[in-house]
Amino acid sequence: MAIYTHHLPAWKREEVEQIKDLADKYALVGLVDVYGIPARQFQQIRRNLRSNAVVKVARNTLVEHSMNELGGHFVDLNGKVSEHSALIFANGNPFKLFKSLEQTKTKRSAKAGEITPEDIVVPAGPTTFKPGPIVGELQQAGIPAAIDGGKVKIKETKTVVKAGEAINKKQADVLSKLGIKPMPVGLSLLAVCYEGDLYLPDVLSVDDEAYKAKITLAAQQAFNLAVNAAVPTACVGVTEAQIAKAVREARNLGVEASIYEKGVIELIISKAYRQANALKAI
Figure 1 (cartoon, rainbow, N blue to C red):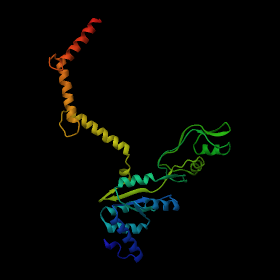
Figure 2: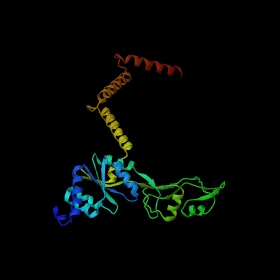
Figure 3: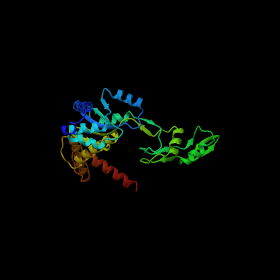
Figure 4: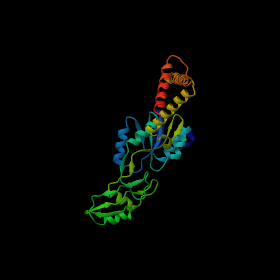
């Protein structure tokens, strides 16, 4: 693949080699979106990740050169390179990396024109604002407001902007005044190569508790199926449950058919006693 970079100046060639060396050193190679992260916070994030990952900012063309030279699924990362992307190198697995990056995110105020990743909901209730132009500003932003007890009150809970929609200037200004910070700040994983495969956020975004609940339900259903279908398995507890079920069914059959066997006679007598009492009560 050297055909892609043999013409590069020395400093660019060195940059490409650095990227390739990092790709060889770490199990994961991915791209993160760094849009909207202030420079100071970005440096702090890099320092916090230093023991587990390396974040490297490089020109898009050099990233593409590097991925082309690495070949395989690394080339697929080129389709995710953007104006605000940076490279990330880490060990572990992509699911843990995604989760760790999500947990480090904070929130910031929205800017006009930005797309919100989630519904922005303004709750009903009193505010700290005194009567004034703010009432009109709230209403222009689609938030029903009125004066109540000398303070501005939001009359009803309102979804101001739905997920995937752009935030206009009036909405951005009002949300900032209300102290609502809807925009996440942090590294967002765009794609990652791991053991020859490419992973995207829609696959990596796993709700651990929901996933565990599904596994638990599947195990319970498989256990019940094995017991009810009398399928012998090595699963702990299945054989015991099958024997216990067979004993119960045999005992019930003995009672219903009045079969005088040990452990059944007492139940037959008890059943006859209950029936006699029921007849006596008529």
